[in-house]
Amino acid sequence: KKRTESSMSEAIVVVVDEQSSAASSHSSRSGSIDIQEDEAILGTDSTSKPSSKNPRQAFAVRDADQSRKLHDQIRTAEEEHKTAVGGYIKSIIYGGLDGIVTTFAIISGIAGSAQSSKFALVLGFANMIADSISMGFGDYLSDDAELQHTKAERAREMWEFENFPEAEIQEMIDIYMKEGFSEEDAVFIVNKMAENKEFFVDHMLTKELGLLPPDEDDDPRKSGLVTTISFITFGIVPLLAYVVLESVDFSGGFNPEFLISCILTAITLFALGSLQGKYGVQYWVYTGFHVMINGAAAAAAAYLIGWGIGQLTGITH
Image (cartoon, rainbow, N blue to C red):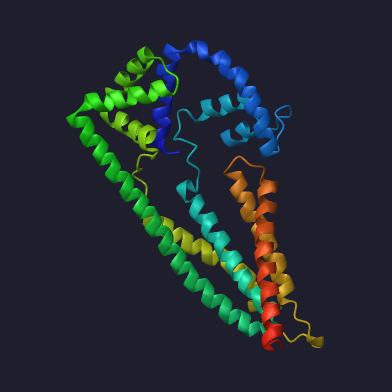
């Protein structure tokens, strides 16, 4: 999450702890049920706690002691929840998955219709370049539209707070009361937050509109560029065997390019899925196989369609 949301959460926790410390015992009892449900989804067991190297791993195995130690270590450092790849993990996985699956599906369709390797190279590269440009531009447009919408809504909330703060404060009090706070606690919390105008508006943006405050590092152009680069980087994997072996003359008419491409693509899909699991809270092996199976299903469909059309039209060599 963004740095603004992190500081926002810490401030609210301090205020709430001062007013409602008695709620902790109930939270502890209900939390054990949530842990059991989450373990079934994540494939983890809270009774076995391997060494956790970051807060996400500690959360996955519900290792509260290790999580506390890790947060103590990073308290004086820059927020570690913002990983090295930052907000670009979505663009990397989004562009990479679409790139490799799309290219591999094209190659599979060509292989199913028994066309030449050169045909696969031409169509594969042409699609990869054209689609990478389109995907990157689309990612830029969607991120830019979302950012402009968020900025416009924040500006409106700021204007409303500056011109009639009483109404905005009452809206937040109503929200907190709907979430179970008493009127006395809600009034105290909201009025305390309202002393910091920027903080209050950002928090209201989240609670009332469900929007994360815009970050100064947000740049839709970078997201689009990352998507394009990721699309090409992973999209070229299925074509590597065709590039390397294109000039090799195999006796007996057997060309191993497609088989090698299948192996390389499967490994890369598993790696991408594992990356997705690493930056989430799901077990990386599960997400790796899940993404690999998804790619295999798409390629199988393309192969069968290519084979079927080849048989019907007579273009199969």
